[in-house]
Amino acid sequence: MNWEREITVEGKIFQVTISDDHEALRSAFAEGRAVVGLWDRERADQNLNPAAYVVEDLKDIDDVFLERVIRRREGLPWNIVKTQRLTIREFAPQDFVSIPDEPEAGISGSLFLKEEPLKDYICHQYGFYEYGIWALVDHEKGLLVGKAGISNLELTDQEEFFSAIKKNDTPVELGYHIFSPYRQQGYGKEACMAILSYAALAVSERIYARIDERNLASIKLAEDLGFRLIARTHSGSVPRLCLYEWNYS
Image (cartoon, rainbow, N blue to C red; front, side, top):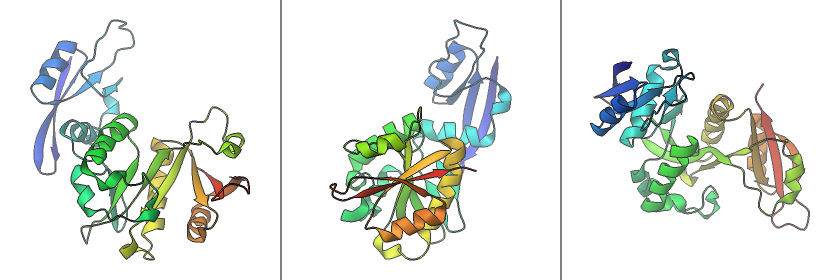
């Protein structure tokens, strides 16, 4: 069975083929169309390549889903969520020219300052996990004001935190950085509130945050967002880090 849909993305019309047939998917993909596989759990030999997205029921498909399928196929950034002032979206390769070199940024270090590493991040992080560090764009001013998002929590050399992480948890953490010209304008809280609401449904209901105990502004923001302190690194660690946890409720 084959279905064809048309979706408009950024003013351009794209076709999407939805099918449970390998040859139909392969042909549509070769012609440059986005494709979605329709999975039949009763068919053990079903081949849905080259579909990167598969659904079991047509009811699972809506325009938002199809737009994301198209954006991934065309190399266009996903729009994650909008707030009153911000469009939170995936980074695009050209964004690197708008990212200032601020040593305290922390999130992914200097990765976002070079075009090729940013392209690799977009391809592998977004393409595999479908979450990561996102661009914060003031949609009225058209300015990139910072970055924030959800990353996998890596605990190398922070053994003190292992016992605080819930068993069978695949931990993720919230991170954010507002560029210096745009600080103290509420962007950080506005972005993080929206990201937590989105991530609780799309990524995990439990989200962590690691904060240098000297960073009082970030600690206050975390507490305002509903994070609670659950662990600290030992006093011998430099800098001493605090582990905070947030739960969706």
